[in-house]
Amino acid sequence: MRAISLVKKLEFQFSGNVSRNALTLGDVDNDGCNELVIGNDKGEVAIFKGKQKLQSITDLSFIACVAVGDIRNEGRNSLVIITADGWCYIYEVPSDESEEITDKKNVDEVDGQGPSSNPPNTTTNTETQSSSESTLGNKNVGKKNELKNPLICVHVQRIPSNTKNIILDDVDGDGQIEMVLGLTDRVLRSYRFLKNIEKTANEFVGEKHQPEDKFLGKFVALNKWECANQIGSITTHHSYDGRPSILVAQPGGTFMRIKCHAKHENPNQEQQRSINSETEPFPGSVDYQFLGISRMRNQNISTEIIGDLKCRCKKNNNLAITDQKSCPYALATLDGSIMLVQDEVILWAIAVDHQIFALTKLDVTGNGCDDIVVCSWDGQTYILDQNKNSVRFHLEEPVRAFHSGWYNVDVDKPSVTALVYVTFKNSIIIYYDIPLKDLICKKFEPELAKLSELYISKDKTKEEALKHVQNMDNKTRRELVEYLLYNAKC
Image (cartoon, rainbow, N blue to C red; front, top):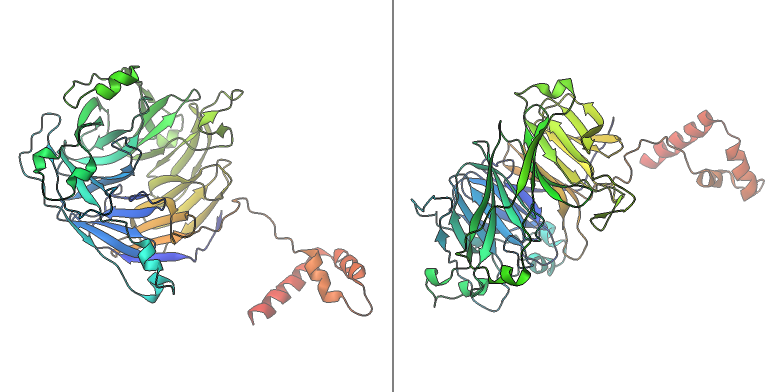
């Protein structure tokens, strides 16, 4: 396996302990550019945009999970923050930028857990840095990178405590985004945000309304599942016919698959459904998958899983009619086992000598297929494509949290691939614009036309020089290239 070196990087300072799911990359302010959101055990959430830290949300409790998505199903992203003591916050940038912004919130209860204690006060601070590096030599770049408006808290709700995983996705195929939470007590819960059609987020702007008048909606519990063992990670996955399911990683390389399908409703009735209506759970099925690798049978080894790996057989999220296979999914275990699975068939499996704690997907090579990116506690990172070709990169520091995705270093340029490391030295390191076009290790072959230019003279024409280089043996040609590289360095 060949090793690579990465050069382009950003580094930020961020103190405190960071949970594995307390960082994400996403478009928080709906401007088309991805930001980095990260939270710590001190109740602070920081938002980084480009090369600056632009906003801090403070005075929360232990941040367990953060996620960015259209959780209110209004066609715009929101920031969802889950704390370990059981509070769910939704932050948004108001669509009306001309209004003065305040930080008001509504508190509600769910699953029979009332607001026994008031939620921590939320304070937002906008921070900018004025340095030659952050402005890139342009005085206007800093202004371009600023959030349109600071995020404000538009909803607070009490939920069960001890959340460790979160996904925002349409898990039942009804076209609406649900929130699925994995808890440390082996329980999985799903919620849907039912909005009050008479209220909007812009009613949080100003001081003329009371908090109880600013009721946007509430999370309603849909389903609850109990797993046999501790939850490693959760992900969504679609079958060849487009039906979604939830994959829940279990120790020993096993996972639980939950198929949940929504009941078909009249669209007109769906719009008229009020926030006080009772939501019936949708039908579904649960089954356990045991993969046949003896090394992954250790029930004390935690497992990570990631689904919906894009491949060339998929077009616009719909599989080709002639292809009756679903997209593959990947598993990784703490003892260093990595495997790619499709339709319960193991396509390949490898073992590494490092403890893997993070598993993500990212199209690093830009060929339209998702690559598998795993990271170990000691900073060893492996990038594997779906054909088992791989490279590795070693960060020379221990890592406490890892994420990969797309990040906008400059708002005037498209987003680029990024590897995000959170170290034990209170720093965030982002390696961006990963220069990998292919993971296949190819033998170096010099361009003969370039080498022939060295032999063009009065005695030899361009064609004669090219023929002379072509007749060289490989050893002479390699020595010539090494000589040229040595002179270039000098």
